[in-house]
Amino acid sequence: MNQRVGLLGGTFDPIHNGHLQIADIAKNFCDLQEVMFIPAAVPPHKSCKAVANFNHRASMIQLALAGRPEFKLSTIEASLPGPSYTIDTLRYLDSHATIATDFFFIIGADAFLDISTWKLYRQVLEATHLVVLARTGSDSCKVKDLITTLGYKPDDSFQIWFHPSFQKKIYSPLLPSMSLVDISSSHIRQSIKANIPVEGLVPSAILEYIHRHDLYV
Image (cartoon, rainbow, N blue to C red):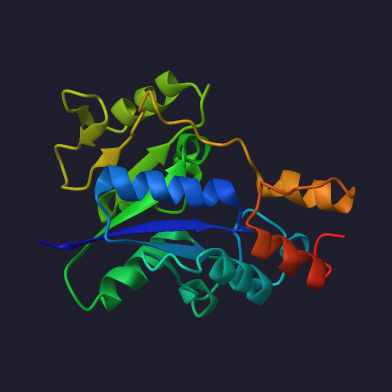
């Protein structure tokens, strides 16, 4: 059986408890051996001046994953030519895998609804399984409509979708017991700048790091 590895990409500016919850849900639902957190070195849709230094963001991820051996930091996008496009990262990971691996790319519903704007998005769909997670109250009908528009067919539970032309699937675990915390990195940055407490939104080690390095002030 192939190794099953989750990929959670993003700016992580900063990493927060919502990111960790998403990784946990995907790991459990898809039976993943590990989840790789992959910070974007050069986010394609953001100004580099508006994003904290890559080393700071990577260091915060490393702190947040302490004690969770199934979660790992990958800094591969720092060694790839920018901007950090998903298809380039997937191709690099596939070509450098030392054992047979199935990758599961974890994204939020909002990002998935914009997937047609991604570089070579159809090749992304053919290169990796997708795990699409939505916050409570999100419009799951839009997610399902897009999945069917892309040519996928559902299983009996409407949580795993198959494509007739290739083997990669879309996992959309709309579980009644699943409630994603409504946290965004931009809200955390704005709160810190306004001296509004963010305890409970980020791991305590991350908050200490932010204060120690005067980030987001």
